[in-house]
Structures are given as C-alpha cells and as structure tokens.
Image 1 (cartoon, helix red, strand yellow):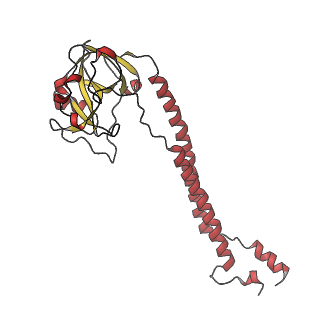
Image 2 (cartoon, one colour):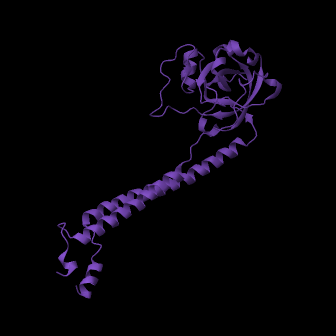
Length: 266
C-alpha cells in the first residue's frame, strides 16, 4: 500500500450521506431550539418567583369589595373583617402534612363591609378530625379580623380529576369558588381564595394541635427548566455523536457494505 493511498484513506474516513446529514441537522435544530427555549423559560420563572416574593413581603391591605382582575391580587397579603359561616364549611383534599393525610378546611366568610362572601382556607385538618364536632375549639363565632394571602384557583389540568357533581359532606378535589357557591347556595362569591396566615393572636381562638392553624405562605411553582434545558442540550450532543460515529463507519466500508477498494489501494 502506498503512502498516497493511506493518505487518501484518511481523508475519506468521514463521508456522511446527504440523508443522514439532513436528518441530523433537523434534529439538532429541534433539540438546541428547545434547550434555548427552556433557558428563556428559566429566566421568566425566576423573575416570576422574585416578583411573587416581593408581593408576599408587602404590607397587608384591605381586600377590595370587587376584584375585577384576580391575577393582579394573587399572592398579595390582605385583611378582611367579618364572620365565618361555619355551617357551610367545605373540605379540600390536601397533600400530606407532617406525615398525616387529611384535608384543608374552606369556610365561607361573610364580610362585615357588605362586600359579599370570600372563601377562607383555614388550614390543614387530619382525617380523624374531618367531622367539625371533633374540633369545636377551633370554631370561630362572631366578627373577627383575618389576615391572609390571596390565591387564584387554577382549572384542573389534563391529567387531574375534576370535582364532578358535589355530594354533601364530600371533599372537593380543588377549590372552585363559583361551583362551591352554587353547591351551598351562597350566591355570588369572590373569584379568589384567601389562605389564612398562622399566628393571628386572640382574634382567632387557638385550635387543637394540628387543626386549623392557618397556612404558611407557599409558592407552588415548579422550576425545572434548567434540568429540561440540559436534557435537550444533552440529546443534541448525543445525536451529533451518533451521526459522526455512524458516518465514519459507512466511510470505512463503502456504499455497498464491502471494503472500499479505493481506500485499500487494491
């Protein structure tokens, strides 16, 4: 074998086909594009979380009588005065809390200023205290002042079960002010839920341990965009590697799968 033949073989070692090149370029465009989009989403999510943190740190203000734009009030600390309609209490299926399975208690709140009814999420209750009779110490009577965080109920996701037809005494899958108001004949209610903050002093009598203690401020916004971006970029690198390796093998064997005589010098 001559030196010229060897040199020629080295130059021809990588001979990609047009079809493989086009498919790979299309795949790289998609994976790199999705990775870049996830990085943009990451920046957006970080800005959103920072804005929410700023809103939750603001001083509490009275909840307006009419809320035309619920999203403008979400995560805002608010105060409101009135009385709980304890006989209209509802249960919302909740995530486990401190290792216990249970519910969150939503109680309609009749505002003292005549602005109607707002649903108040008063916190977690374990399953063995589902019956209000087991937590009478937490029953708040008369006019009180409440401080909480405004939350806007979200519609059920594609894979989430809906509330269906409510049955008296049953637990709801998610908060839905309009549907809850209709089920309990409450009339018009505010399109938001106020999550009562814990530690509000004598205005709300202390409850038995683990019941109706309010809800610590929470932001349930998953932020997995960096992992997604790295996944897409990793797929792009993998695709490029497969392309190079597969086309090197093709160049070594020739287009018909037999040794390339031009490389061997035969």
